[in-house]
Amino acid sequence: MVVTAPFTGNRPGAQPGLPNLPEPPSGWPVGSYAKYEEAQRAVDHLADNEFPVADVTIVGVDLMLVERVIGRLTWGRVLLTGAASGAWLGLFVGLVLSLLSPTGGLASILTGLVIGIVFGVVSGAITYGASRGRRDFTSQSQLVAGRYDVLCQPRNAEKARDMLGKLAMGTEG
Image (cartoon, rainbow, N blue to C red; front, side):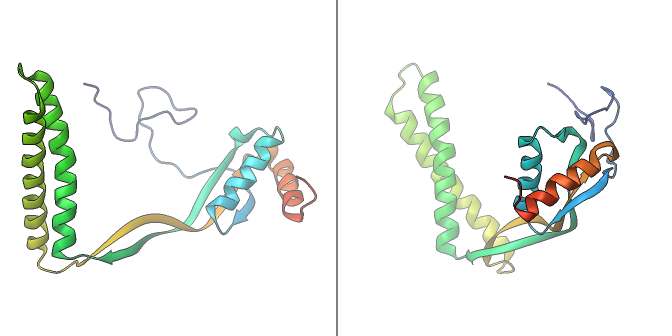
């Protein structure tokens, strides 16, 4: 088992084994975009034109958590979702049991499947029942930014700004 400390990793320039503490990005702004795809396209353009992209950073500014409501949560949906997730777990356990069992076979798989479905339904019902209707909807959360700035190290910032300016004007492919 490998144990790692928080904030350790492979940040460029970090010394191995020392903490990789968060630090603000550095560089000069060379472009600002409303959508991440636009910033990504700008950096891709630089890469396609042999620019040293190791000097470039995309920074999300004005971060916000966006929760998009997908649908209404009902007992039927809760039980069906619980049964489906339990079925997958039960199928996996049943397959493992069938491989380890001297007789093997379909009985182990079906037993695991049934037990998994029952477990999933009961677990989903308990969780949903405990919420007492305080969250009767399903949603997906996403971290997004108000804008995406492209920064570049000073040694190449002017060149990057020129290349992105030509891209924006449509004079460079």
